[in-house]
Length: 155
Image 1 (cartoon, helix red, strand yellow):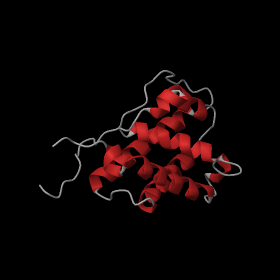
Image 2 (image 1 turned 180 degrees about the vertical axis):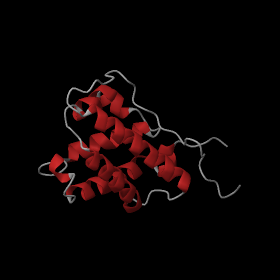
Image 3 (image 1 turned 90 degrees about the horizontal axis):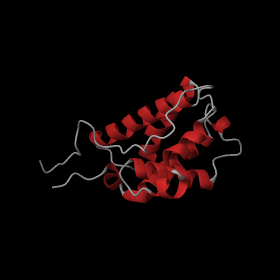
Image 4 (image 1 turned 135 degrees about the vertical axis):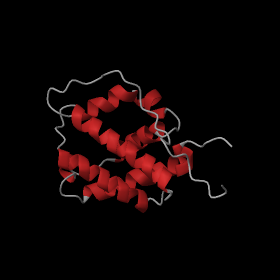
């Protein structure tokens, strides 16, 4: 049996859109993160970030082919000055948003999801600091299961 991608295990495009909508709905009500999006999070932003997450988790590479890949994502974080508290809150809200979006609850999937969120927010934090030295031509990461493969109740 082939190991599914995290993208397919989660439920594909619709699952990641639910996740990002649930996350941004919470963000818009959050006093620490909402100031980063005055006026709220646009439909365009939600759609673009959804494409990023889809690609990262093993889905189609539409973020790269239509929006410019890693360099484009990096440009959105340059000089933002994300704080440590904001980075941590992002991770917290994403964890709760996964529940809101009814993503798979198995520990292996949630571990991979939050491992990426932790890694990605630390990279965004670092890259967002004034005068940060960043890798400008990295590929979009392709996140996998890590140490634990998908849970299979048949075994």
